Image 1 (cartoon, one colour):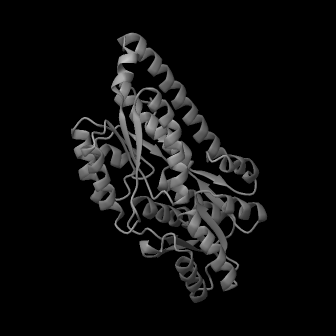
Image 2 (cartoon, rainbow, N blue to C red; image 1 turned 45 degrees about the horizontal axis):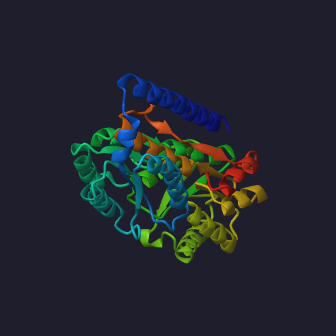
Image 3 (cartoon, rainbow, N blue to C red; image 1 turned 60 degrees about the horizontal axis):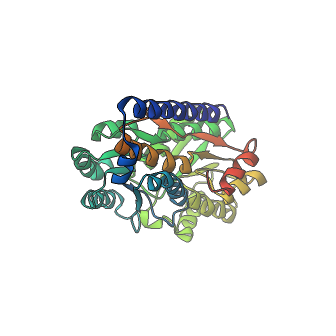
Length: 335
């Protein structure tokens, strides 16, 4: 809860400062707002598959920010891959597609920097307002010359999860990764191991990315791991779909392993409330979509940026102590 309060305070401060800068910038420079609106900005947001529960929430946040963009005569276009089999190269191609379409602002998740950064740098070189979000962190935003980063710190989120499990007595943690090679997912699992260090051991269960969104494949793999190593007493997954699959696997294996996950869903929150899942690590996906889209657009349209960089939306631990309040936000589709 303390981590959550600090995150919310930081976001609030960033909004207030950014709003003040926006007003003063318009007043001091004498920007003709109606003329700027007439030009309109073309904002392209590169995210995950629309069918992915996490990214559907991010998309809603971007669409909410799009209301202001449209009011100023601009457009917001969502671009996402068909699957995660070739995530990095596909994302790089989507950035190039946005450039070719005349984007004036691009929001991009830097999942696989080695495969995406060349395209991102091409966008920056053309003077496009580029904002990283969700993956890659501040380091990659600096590497590409982007304006900044909006999202959670994936490594620190993992550390929080590892510490939580260790504080509850876990000794052998399994981190289920269905997108191996993705920078943010690797950082999460590494963070879990480092957070538990000295009190518990942790290992990764890397599965083919084709398993992502395949509940049977993930459930069978987790069940096999639990059956093979009965000392595993904690399982953490990189997303809510895998959490659903792992919950079924734990039950099928007759295991007493505790479950944790990154991100939220109604299923996850219901299990936490019922006591069949220990916790979830929230990074507020709706805010990521909203803030990153707003940030890229405002820079393209008015040349302003938030005073705070990075703009962090997490991590925050959700467990039985605060699950009721958080559930209201999830049901409203904004968390």
